[in-house]
Image (cartoon, rainbow, N blue to C red):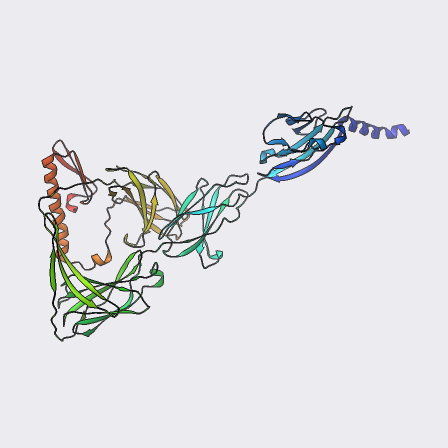
Length: 568
């Protein structure tokens, strides 16, 4: 009876002796780490052969063997990722797996072959490898302009799961991250992007995050960038004219709104001219520059005619350029009569030259005395030799994708002209704004044919592009109208346009005779060019400044462009 009661115990003991002594434990590791699985034996046995395999330890050897040692050196290895780094002389045959992956998860068995029956040492472990969030990005500034910032980064460890998106946070330098504008870009292949619609001469903080299926990385380093200055986008305020004497008018004004200055104000450009009694333009503009000093500015215009009406415009200036003009009603000097003298000088050049008629008058202000020049131009044509260079044709720009605030574009280069294309630049503006103001410019290399940009402020925008070579810049490409920030909605209009930029001071109240000259002179130029082409039978002539592309084929003159001859 005693024997029967002890029989189960004896069977279990025998079974254990047949399997050998097996110990087990569990280890949890994260993707990318080096993991060491411990296995030791009694060093009194000396240096013994050992093996590691994947799966439970069988009755002999190792299942799915990954590495084997003869006691002195490794004699078999499945991959260089499996290493025995322990000191065998003290019985350490621990397995190290380098840069573990999720696929390394599972059971591992260690067997040390000790001489004798059922003496082998067996050790069994369960390894679980889990993916983690991506490592933080390291972000650098590539280019900073008036209204754009381009940043770039190097790909980082993805945590064992592919990176699916990036998040960009942008805020005013003086505010907290709670006020930041966040934009997510679902393009894991990106290594740089451009943020647009920023304010000139303003400091921003920027940081980025990488995202995978596990979660979002820690924040990158914080970039502090200050955009470059731009020309003011607002006119001077509260401009007033006051007749002081029969020969002088006092002009007072305040600077533009602070958020329209786009940088430190350096000064003001003051333009004035005489009008006839009916208020029509009578004289050419005269110009005066003064330095910006305070919040209430003033200057006295002197040497004016008595009982005469004058118009004045003022433009604020930064280091980047001149802003729009402010105006005030015409002002008449007092009735006292004093004659002023003018000196006329004529500067002329050779044949096919422009003759300049220049009136010089002295004007005194409270801060400085400057010489004012009024200029009348007339062009005299004679015999000349014309050298015509060919700029590149504009690229054709297309919309690839609009997602939230992110715009992906691609473009096809046109004819490169007389020399290879050296680059492209893209202009972006609000749809209701002029190309003269609030313009965003982004440069691209000649090898680029696509780009991704981020509009910080959701709105509707116009985008166009130009090509450049050593001979000049192409005309504007087709214009794309894009609406951002509307989920699931895209609005794109393709327009073929030809734009001509003008400046405020040159375009304000030009005379009718100036418009007539602008029409007659180009027509004369076209007739002259046609005569030259017909005489010398040129194979191909391309004239960019006249907005007309021409070539000679089989003695027939033809033209190509989106403009007609009547538009010249």
